[in-house]
Length: 250
Image 1 (cartoon, helix red, strand yellow):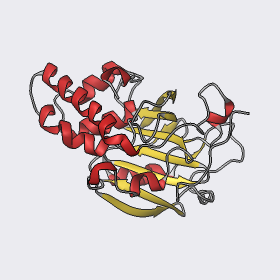
Image 2 (cartoon, helix red, strand yellow):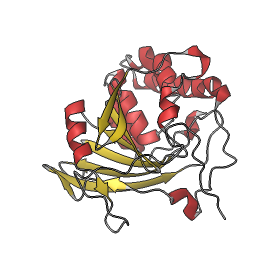
Image 3 (cartoon, helix red, strand yellow):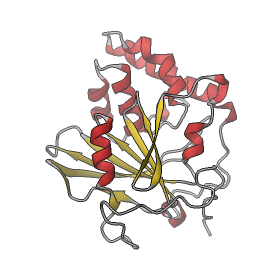
C-alpha cells in the first residue's frame, strides 16, 4: 500500500485527532478513518517511534513507512476475486446496525458508507457502514459503530497470527448479546460477530463500549428488526471460521 491509498473520509479530522496523541490513540483513529485491515498491528509497531516526534512532517513520514510495511507484510493476504464490486448490491448484502438517533447524551452526527477497491497486500478492504455519535455536529466522534460483511472481515481474521510471525494484538474474549465478541485493548475497539455482519465499535474504554453494545439495533427501515437489548442473531455458518462466501455480483 502506498500513502496515496489512505483515502480517509475526513482527512482533516484524522490528522487533528492523531496530532500529538499516543500511538494507541493514533491507531484507533487510523482504524476508524482508514480501516487499513488487520495488518495494522504490525504497522503500529513500525511507526510508533516516529509518531512520538513533535514535528508533523516526521510523523507523516512514519505513517508512510508504516503503511508501506502493510504491503510488505501482506504477502499472505487474501485474494479478492470473489469479493463483490462496490457498485453492486451484493457489496451491501449484510445487516447494518447503529444506536438509533441518540446514545445517552450523544447525538448521531454523521453516517459514512465506504467501499474501496482492495489495495495490494491488504488482508481486508474497507467495506462498511458507519454511524458516529458526538456531543455536537462539529465535534469528534465519541462512539462509532461500523457494520462490515462477515465474509470479508470475520473472527478468524483477527484470531489467526498475522504474516511474518508477529504477535497478535492483546484481546479479551467476551460474549455480549449472546454472540461472541473481542475487545482490542490497545485500539479500544470492540467487535461482535452476528449473522453475516461483523460489528466494529470504537470508544473510550471497554465499559462505554459494553453499554453501546447493549443498545445496538438494526438501522431504521431494516428487516427483520433486531431491537436494542434483544439477543443478536447467531453467526452464520462459516462466519467464525472464515469460510463464509460473499454473494456474487450476479
